Image (cartoon, rainbow, N blue to C red; front, side, top):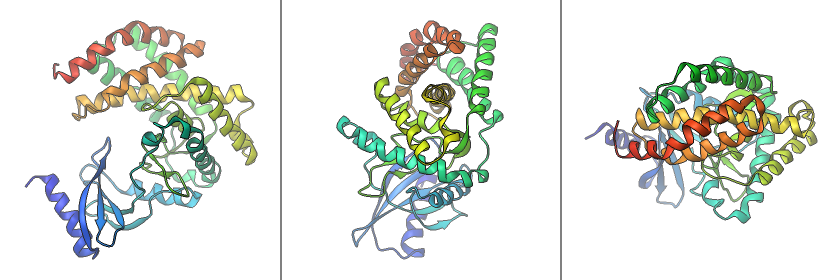
Length: 347
């Protein structure tokens, strides 16, 4: 029996024998970009629960439990924790259902209502989370840089299969330094870090349900806005995006959080755009690494939209003009061939 099957047998025994639930079935619910897996436990009485399987050798459930408790204090809806086995890496959770924002937003007519709820939760998190963010690690220069340098290593050298030249290394360093300085100058808030359509669940009430929050940090106010409105899995016209982002600014002002809202709309949009560049550079590296290191090909299809976001943002700000030209010249023309080569299994 494989290690995976052994863990499934162990978590099933944990729920049925040790926690004494009358289980009808245990089925795969989802997996994410880490080693974590999630199983849906259907009970004979009709209810369902979720079990997180986080192998201790690869995953520490401590951050998930810590951040989840903090988020609960702010009033946003995260899965309730029913039981924990820290030694084996099992967590029994409230089931938030199967309807993600990504699925629901295929009906574009629902966008304003769904994003309205998501922005309401985000404003709550950013305002009420101000008293709790000191319990999070900072999204500081070291963390920002650690993410940015994934792109030259995994996206350029491995995925595009072109070593970074000295000229490109200098361009990257100049651009990275600028992006880091801009991120650190923004007001710092409680940042989910992956506040997007796959991690927001549609609920009958008290929505959205928020998942996959264990990597939260104290960081730039524009970051979670960039996650949701420059989402790598779904795209909206710039006009709608700006309207949603500026509606969030007004919500912050209405709650008295003037320091988080910036001096004007232009500054707030600049925060949103520039931190999105940092995020998408990181994502190019992470999505490429998920294939070349971890064998997960599903994220490769999301690279083109990520590059498009970067091209759009770099065109808007003169400080990033040279980076935008590099993307247009060296990345966009090669992306399709790199994708096909990766899926064909060629080095």
